[in-house]
Length: 190
Image (tube, rainbow, N blue to C red):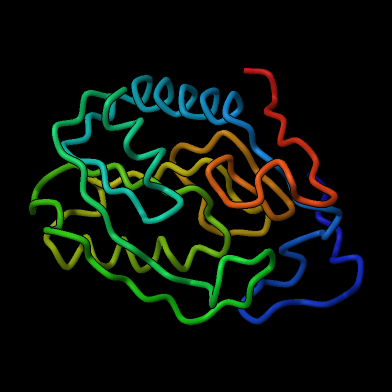
Protein backbone atom coordinates (compact mmCIF):
# COMPACT_ATOMS: atom_id res chain seq x y z
CA UNK A 1 0.00 0.00 0.00
CA UNK A 2 1.15 3.52 -0.54
CA UNK A 3 1.36 6.09 2.22
CA UNK A 4 0.26 9.20 0.30
CA UNK A 5 -1.71 11.89 2.06
CA UNK A 6 -5.43 12.26 1.43
CA UNK A 7 -6.04 13.59 -2.07
CA UNK A 8 -8.18 16.49 -0.82
CA UNK A 9 -5.87 17.23 2.14
CA UNK A 10 -8.69 16.91 4.66
CA UNK A 11 -8.90 14.82 7.79
CA UNK A 12 -11.78 13.70 9.93
CA UNK A 13 -11.75 14.30 13.68
CA UNK A 14 -9.82 11.52 15.38
CA UNK A 15 -7.88 10.47 12.30
CA UNK A 16 -4.14 10.36 12.16
CA UNK A 17 -2.63 12.37 9.28
CA UNK A 18 -2.65 10.32 6.10
CA UNK A 19 -4.82 7.59 7.63
CA UNK A 20 -6.88 7.26 4.44
CA UNK A 21 -5.66 7.92 0.90
CA UNK A 22 -9.24 8.46 -0.26
CA UNK A 23 -8.55 6.65 -3.51
CA UNK A 24 -11.74 4.75 -2.85
CA UNK A 25 -12.68 2.14 -0.29
CA UNK A 26 -11.77 -1.51 -0.46
CA UNK A 27 -14.45 -4.14 -0.53
CA UNK A 28 -13.79 -7.51 1.08
CA UNK A 29 -15.86 -10.42 -0.22
CA UNK A 30 -16.89 -13.59 1.59
CA UNK A 31 -14.19 -15.68 -0.13
CA UNK A 32 -11.51 -13.17 0.88
CA UNK A 33 -12.85 -13.15 4.44
CA UNK A 34 -12.61 -16.96 4.62
CA UNK A 35 -9.02 -16.82 3.33
CA UNK A 36 -8.11 -14.19 5.94
CA UNK A 37 -9.64 -16.21 8.77
CA UNK A 38 -7.89 -19.38 7.64
CA UNK A 39 -4.58 -17.49 7.57
CA UNK A 40 -5.18 -16.29 11.13
CA UNK A 41 -5.99 -19.85 12.26
CA UNK A 42 -2.77 -21.14 10.67
CA UNK A 43 -0.71 -18.35 12.26
CA UNK A 44 -2.18 -18.91 15.74
CA UNK A 45 -1.48 -22.64 15.49
CA UNK A 46 2.05 -22.06 14.15
CA UNK A 47 2.69 -19.67 17.04
CA UNK A 48 1.65 -22.34 19.53
CA UNK A 49 -0.80 -19.96 21.18
CA UNK A 50 -3.70 -21.87 22.76
CA UNK A 51 -6.40 -19.47 23.95
CA UNK A 52 -8.77 -20.34 26.78
CA UNK A 53 -11.16 -17.69 25.48
CA UNK A 54 -11.83 -15.55 22.43
CA UNK A 55 -12.92 -11.96 23.05
CA UNK A 56 -14.83 -10.55 20.09
CA UNK A 57 -15.00 -6.77 19.72
CA UNK A 58 -18.55 -5.90 18.69
CA UNK A 59 -19.75 -5.37 16.16
CA UNK A 60 -17.13 -5.81 13.45
CA UNK A 61 -15.12 -8.49 15.20
CA UNK A 62 -17.99 -10.78 16.12
CA UNK A 63 -18.27 -12.82 12.94
CA UNK A 64 -14.50 -13.39 12.87
CA UNK A 65 -14.46 -14.17 16.60
CA UNK A 66 -17.17 -16.80 16.18
CA UNK A 67 -15.30 -18.44 13.32
CA UNK A 68 -11.99 -18.44 15.21
CA UNK A 69 -13.62 -19.80 18.36
CA UNK A 70 -14.85 -22.81 16.41
CA UNK A 71 -11.82 -23.29 14.14
CA UNK A 72 -9.39 -23.16 17.07
CA UNK A 73 -11.68 -25.22 19.32
CA UNK A 74 -11.69 -22.56 22.03
CA UNK A 75 -14.10 -23.38 24.88
CA UNK A 76 -15.34 -19.83 25.63
CA UNK A 77 -16.24 -16.70 23.71
CA UNK A 78 -16.79 -13.29 25.30
CA UNK A 79 -17.76 -9.97 23.77
CA UNK A 80 -17.19 -6.29 24.41
CA UNK A 81 -18.55 -3.39 22.45
CA UNK A 82 -16.33 -0.43 21.73
CA UNK A 83 -17.80 2.58 19.95
CA UNK A 84 -15.31 4.90 18.26
CA UNK A 85 -17.43 6.67 15.64
CA UNK A 86 -20.57 8.76 15.76
CA UNK A 87 -22.15 6.54 13.10
CA UNK A 88 -21.21 3.82 10.61
CA UNK A 89 -20.78 6.06 7.59
CA UNK A 90 -17.59 6.01 5.52
CA UNK A 91 -14.86 8.21 7.09
CA UNK A 92 -17.14 8.87 10.10
CA UNK A 93 -15.80 11.28 12.71
CA UNK A 94 -14.19 9.67 15.73
CA UNK A 95 -15.11 10.19 19.37
CA UNK A 96 -13.45 9.06 22.59
CA UNK A 97 -13.78 5.27 22.78
CA UNK A 98 -16.44 3.80 25.02
CA UNK A 99 -16.22 0.16 26.17
CA UNK A 100 -19.38 -1.69 27.14
CA UNK A 101 -18.95 -5.19 28.54
CA UNK A 102 -21.49 -7.68 27.23
CA UNK A 103 -21.36 -10.42 29.86
CA UNK A 104 -18.51 -11.44 32.16
CA UNK A 105 -14.86 -10.71 31.43
CA UNK A 106 -12.48 -13.57 30.67
CA UNK A 107 -11.26 -15.14 33.90
CA UNK A 108 -8.07 -13.96 35.56
CA UNK A 109 -5.15 -16.14 34.53
CA UNK A 110 -6.69 -17.19 31.21
CA UNK A 111 -5.13 -16.85 27.76
CA UNK A 112 -7.23 -14.66 25.48
CA UNK A 113 -7.37 -14.05 21.74
CA UNK A 114 -8.92 -10.62 21.11
CA UNK A 115 -10.55 -10.38 17.67
CA UNK A 116 -11.54 -7.25 15.77
CA UNK A 117 -12.23 -6.46 12.13
CA UNK A 118 -9.78 -3.56 11.78
CA UNK A 119 -7.09 -1.86 13.82
CA UNK A 120 -7.29 1.74 12.65
CA UNK A 121 -5.74 3.96 15.32
CA UNK A 122 -5.09 1.50 18.14
CA UNK A 123 -7.50 3.23 20.53
CA UNK A 124 -9.86 0.24 20.72
CA UNK A 125 -6.97 -2.12 21.46
CA UNK A 126 -5.68 0.20 24.19
CA UNK A 127 -9.09 0.22 25.87
CA UNK A 128 -9.69 -3.54 25.55
CA UNK A 129 -6.21 -4.49 26.77
CA UNK A 130 -6.59 -2.17 29.79
CA UNK A 131 -9.96 -3.78 30.55
CA UNK A 132 -8.41 -7.26 30.40
CA UNK A 133 -5.56 -6.19 32.69
CA UNK A 134 -8.12 -4.83 35.16
CA UNK A 135 -9.88 -8.23 35.03
CA UNK A 136 -6.61 -9.97 35.99
CA UNK A 137 -5.57 -11.25 32.58
CA UNK A 138 -1.79 -10.84 32.14
CA UNK A 139 -0.67 -8.88 29.08
CA UNK A 140 1.65 -11.76 28.14
CA UNK A 141 -1.42 -14.03 27.90
CA UNK A 142 -3.27 -11.86 25.39
CA UNK A 143 -2.92 -11.82 21.60
CA UNK A 144 -4.67 -9.57 19.08
CA UNK A 145 -6.06 -10.81 15.78
CA UNK A 146 -7.51 -8.40 13.22
CA UNK A 147 -8.58 -8.90 9.65
CA UNK A 148 -6.87 -5.69 8.56
CA UNK A 149 -4.64 -2.95 9.96
CA UNK A 150 -4.45 0.63 8.79
CA UNK A 151 -1.01 1.36 7.37
CA UNK A 152 -0.51 4.30 9.75
CA UNK A 153 -1.50 2.46 12.94
CA UNK A 154 1.31 1.96 15.45
CA UNK A 155 -0.45 -1.07 16.95
CA UNK A 156 0.56 -4.17 15.01
CA UNK A 157 -1.69 -7.15 15.74
CA UNK A 158 -0.11 -10.52 16.49
CA UNK A 159 -2.18 -12.01 13.66
CA UNK A 160 -3.29 -9.86 10.73
CA UNK A 161 -3.34 -10.89 7.07
CA UNK A 162 -3.77 -7.45 5.44
CA UNK A 163 -2.65 -3.83 5.68
CA UNK A 164 -4.81 -1.13 4.05
CA UNK A 165 -4.58 2.55 3.26
CA UNK A 166 -8.28 3.31 2.94
CA UNK A 167 -11.72 2.43 4.25
CA UNK A 168 -12.82 -1.24 4.10
CA UNK A 169 -16.37 -2.39 3.45
CA UNK A 170 -16.76 -5.86 4.97
CA UNK A 171 -19.22 -8.37 3.46
CA UNK A 172 -21.63 -8.18 6.40
CA UNK A 173 -21.95 -4.39 6.21
CA UNK A 174 -24.84 -2.49 4.72
CA UNK A 175 -23.91 -1.21 1.28
CA UNK A 176 -21.59 -4.08 0.43
CA UNK A 177 -21.67 -4.59 -3.33
CA UNK A 178 -23.05 -1.07 -3.84
CA UNK A 179 -20.18 1.12 -2.60
CA UNK A 180 -19.24 3.73 -5.22
CA UNK A 181 -15.58 3.61 -6.22
CA UNK A 182 -14.94 0.38 -4.27
CA UNK A 183 -12.02 -1.80 -5.30
CA UNK A 184 -11.50 -5.40 -4.25
CA UNK A 185 -9.32 -6.07 -1.22
CA UNK A 186 -6.87 -8.61 -2.55
CA UNK A 187 -4.54 -10.60 -0.32
CA UNK A 188 -0.88 -11.18 -1.06
CA UNK A 189 -0.25 -14.80 -2.04
CA UNK A 190 0.41 -16.95 1.02
